[in-house]
Amino acid sequence: MPIKQVLSGQRVPVKIWTDDVDEKSKAQLANLAQMPFIHHHVAAMPDAHVGIGATIGSVIATHKAIIPAAVGVDIGCGMVAARLSLTANDIDEKSLKAVFGQISHGVPVGRAQHRDDTVLADAVRPFEAGLKALSARHPQLLKAFGKASKWTHQMGTLGGGNHFIEVCLDEADRVWVMLHSGSRGIGNAMADYFIQLARKDMERRMIQLPDRELAYFAEGSEHFDDYVEALQWAQEYARQNRQCMLDLVLSALARHLPSFVVTSEVVNCHHNYVAQEHHFGANVWVTRKGAIRAREGDLGIVPGSMGARSYIVRGKGNAESFCSSAHGAGRRMSRTTAEKQFTEADLVRQTAGVVCRKDKGVLDEIPAAYKDIDAVMANQNDLTDVLHTLKQVVCVKG
Image 1 (cartoon, rainbow, N blue to C red):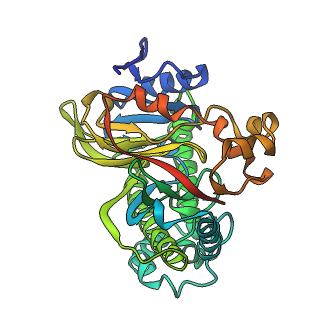
Image 2: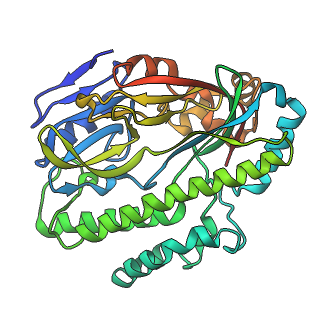
């Protein structure tokens, strides 16, 4: 489908790939489009919904500036998926229940973390020097996330909210493992620290903003280079965190399922990050706030909710979207609204056939709280091609 809406009247237009976008999100997008360093236009993906400062599902190209709050607090959040040599014939309800328990035991979820960092020491070690250098210049960072060892214990952990681990079947009944997580507490602490610094910079320079959450660092300013360094550190930490969890999940599966191997189909992609790219004749910083890169040939993952289909996609390289795609279904309602509107019985019905938690603690993640993933995919058929359609049989949440 082509672009559904264009917002005009700002410094640059906003191009939106859906009619299903609320007025608060439109206001946020319009505010973004007023900023003096926005390049060419702002793109809003089919899963766009209101965020803090910047709309989730937006793609923001900027000249010589980055907005930390637009990147958000879960720097490097994204997905990894891997197809296994197993098929539906290799699993049954008993084994899936055992797998659910084994994953829940082997991968810390919610607020839990590893008791020490010895198991994942090789994964942690490459990040030590970079964090030490950042912390030497910004000692407040260590105070922001508590004990210096905490980040090492959170490598290979899921977290809570909309993060999940799933075992899925594709259209040919082949088994996949898929999970969603980011840079954990350390990424959150880095983001919050630099967001506050950006706000202080705006106040000191007396720069008026349409929204205080759009405070930014310009290239050459005092904190720009350190923020970029922190971004890159957290994005790589997030990628490694997902890889470590994938390894832990595969070990958990090996205890209860027949012998298997991982095929060549493995995808590991960010959907909350910043990269330097070339678009519309200029080298720019691209912030994908809840969007994946979808250059021609790029592989990506677009998950639904805990009761809906997910998709492995290949990018088409659509220039108007800055070569981007939706990152998932996108929330239709807040967590508080979902908890008020639905019951545990609703959750049981909407997750029928999935081995997962079906209690009040995950009611805010009920499928009906999200947009229709199939409508999202239909709205972006000019952005991606679908390679595989996945349906979960196990879902582990924090």
